[in-house]
Length: 366
Image (cartoon, rainbow, N blue to C red; front, side, top):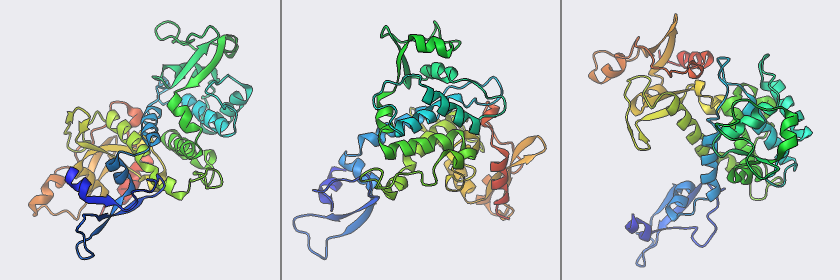
């Protein structure tokens, strides 16, 4: 690696390694280089930034925060994930964007309550009428994401003591000095481009079917809204969002391939990929029910429409493309999947959604 690093120099050295540029040309720069021996290569900007050790700290923070936001602890007693916590977070993001909370000291204001109710009226089911004190209180149970500070400068929410039921809005207001978001998350939300990325990721994870109602037609800020921000920011956005989606899907499938059943973990390494049933570019849907965990070879076959999950009566099974030929030995591994059950998450809330299954089934090669 050091030899490569010493002999190949990015043409942009001496310039700012911009997070808004997608690719850089690099060229040989040995002292004896001549026009005939000098070569140029086009490499992804993100690879260059990692190589130079200058990948923006905000990018790493963004990836970490999205992983936490994609796996919020939520009430599952009704057989589905309640929307209250992500609704509260969306309300906070909109108000931060409007300049309501310049400091990371967030009171339970009437504006916050009204915005929470407005978003809940869009995304909530008929029975989802939980008041804001539910998520305002219980969000404090999600790691370091949210802290409630009392007027005595001590945390109001204390796990194991008073965390089971949420107090009333009146009780909270009487004792609350302010709430605080994770400092890294608050800093990201005060940057227009990062806030747009986080907001869109949160909607795509929890409320993809309401995306048009919750997001402006242009999700990412333009240069007029944030100096130095342009469409390249949107194009650079998928890595942190994809990492959060991948972590969630792998966890709900217990790191097991839904086709082969193989499971292998070594530290942070796992042999499965997280795959979208309907591609993100088409669906903007990062909910785990639009995902499935597959090993590398089955992921490839899945992406090339050689295999697809199919609903047969009450059972979800694998279907294989009729173009596969049982006379060809290399096709046998996929043909053996035909009619075998899909290995699903234990939690039925994360089973593949019907519309996602239909999309894949319609595109199976025939």
